[in-house]
Image (tube, rainbow, N blue to C red):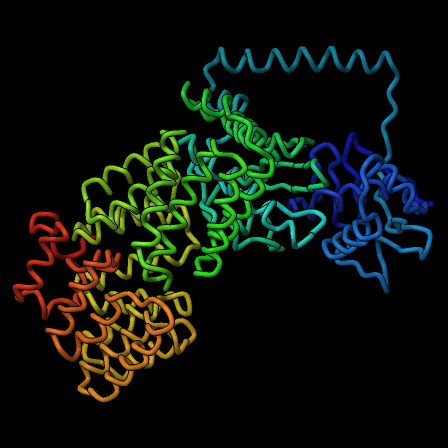
Length: 621
């Protein structure tokens, strides 16, 4: 039986090493995304290489007081170990399964012969080493040897950008996915409010969920120099969270901790973890930030679980999932009427549910409950960035552009790392024709959310609304399948390339026959191309759809723009009566250029509070 060699706290085998103190598995010196129960199981097996560890022993070590499905958890952990080590159950090199008995580690653990010291020799060595360590720095500093002084007193490099990777859901139960995702989002929000390093937004980091990429690879893609990752395991009313903070270059762990708390303490735990991470990154918090983190109020645990599920579904963006998110946020505030964050997220969700891009219900249905929810959120917590974001969004539905800008700026001041806040502020500036300022905000949103194609599409859209159609086409096409097909098609249409425009629209939202967002653009392109019969056929299809569900009037206005100007204006006037959010684009969208000299259109522009001095034409980048 090979003997295990324990060098302080590191066990080595093949090209791997397990650092028990740091809770890490490394391969060729690079940290792997591996932790939680799989790492615990591997550590137990490595304690006695070659010896059989029974399932009963594992249960006593890992789950002594908790009722869990031991077989399922162990099988999941062993499978994860084999996946990471490149092992297999059929021809094992490291972990062998013994049916009805247990498991054993069969790989060779590397030996390192220990050095034998006498007590007196050890004392002499320590005394001499102490003298040397004191004398050399004193000598070098006294001689003003700057290069050596900097080397001796080198500090941890300043962390400029941080990514919180999706926390691993243990033991990989799909029904608990919202829980680990919600914890990830909560930590991103807490860290973002501190105004220290740039914190990558949720949409980008979620692309690494379940990824086998190394920390170095992930860091390069996100352009960050530190990464937080961890695991979340919920069992009944308890939750076990492990968290690691690692510097990327040179790769080393800066901090790690493990928390075993009750569900009731979860919001407080999220703030505690954020405060610990900030402390390790040497982020100096303002007194009000320290106070806000330290004074997190307890939230009803069932309400918090509803809130986490609401966050999970709001990120999906479809009408059905937005409705599901509304249900969870409403349940959260019913269970805890003082839950400010849940009210704010409810207001934001209502806004997007009543937006034309969601093909949901009209604003007259979603607006009042959204305004009631955000008012309650601000009453409970005026410092909540998400509440001011919600107010900014809702102000655009009231055509109150100065108030929308004020609220977006407030939201950004409260959470400088809110990618959604920067992005929506940029969209507002674009809609007002302030393209240079819009580009600045959206480019920063890209820095905060580099893998979110929406922000890059928005930059392409600025090129479109400023009449730079070749640039718009190049940018949309560069995004491949992530590009927005509708404005890409409209860009081709403005260049009179109608065949390419219709080809792009055939891909729009998987060419859904009921997607009026795409159908309206198709009717517009057919009208411009002189294909009136085809355009009217598409409009007839849209009319049929409107008999079964709400269709925003702006969609019909777009469809008629290529056929009849008076009909298009009539639908825009109806859109105003119904508070259609798509009227936001009336000032800058090139498709409305043929209507700008029409008195009725000009009257509508005044009703929408658009003025000539709000913006300037042309994008400046």
